[in-house]
Image 1: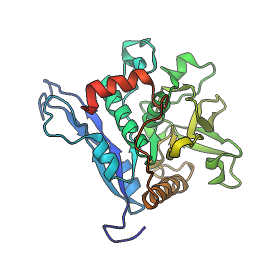
Image 2: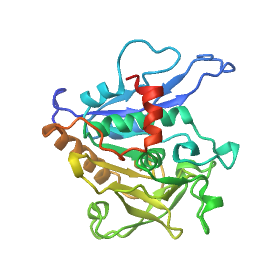
Image 3: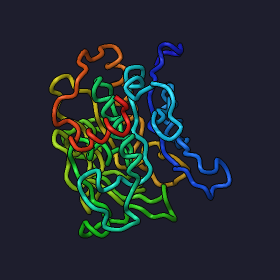
Image 4: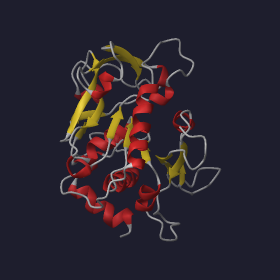
Amino acid sequence: MPKTVAGRLKIGLSACFQHADPTRSLFTNKTLQYVEQSIAHWLMSAGAMVVMVPCPTGETARGDTRLSHYAEWLDGVVMHGGADVWPGSYGETPLKDAWIGDRIRDLYDLALVEAFEQVGKPIFGVCRGLQLINVAFGGTLYQDIETQHAGALTHRDPVSYDKNYHDLVLVEGTRLAGMYPGVTHTRVNSIHHQGIKDLAPGFEIEAWSYPDHVPEAIRRTTTRGGHGYIAATQWHPEFHGSGSVITTVDDTPILNDFLNACTAAKRQPQRWRHRMPGQIRDRAARLLRQALLRR
């Protein structure tokens, strides 16, 4: 990547939320938007400049900056991990109060995906980001893998956290498999209890957990109308090499693939500026326009 500031990619990173809490001693009753350090440093490791994309609405909102402005300015976006996806975002009722997720963040994340989709800029999702992308384009989720998927592995251990691992099988013939020639079986971290149940139309599964067969990586396959790159992993590639003696899949090819797509999109920007019907769940899109996009 060029060393000059002008030549470096500008990558957006979706915000995590801590909602207003009157019991918090610092920033009492204030909404916090933030990023986790590892994922920013992961993107910066390849020379990219990382910009958190704040939610433009809320009780303190002022001015006319919109998510679409960030989509026009930035070269791509990474959808961050974090809280559960609200089951209502894919047409279900929470089976437990503990799985209610974060509806406000869903609205923001869906709006951010829509903004970058509209201008054909690359989108990459990590963990929650994969789940959110799947929901945005019409898929559904297991609210809890352990209770809804027979024979499930332990996909989340709150004690071991990012030191919890499981095996992974790459799907032969996919782009992801092509990044790892000669590798069919590997290992990844696992920090989630929700996961893809029904895959969104126009996407393919590039990796499965082994042996319980839960989708672990997806990529959009349809490119009608100039639509851009969208891919995601259920594991956290940015946590690779965080002090573990267990060898996990190398994160470098995944990062380079996304940033190469951002470079290509920067050199040949898409000329269309409209969303084709059916690309993002219609009900969610209406909520986005009403609650977040401020059109």
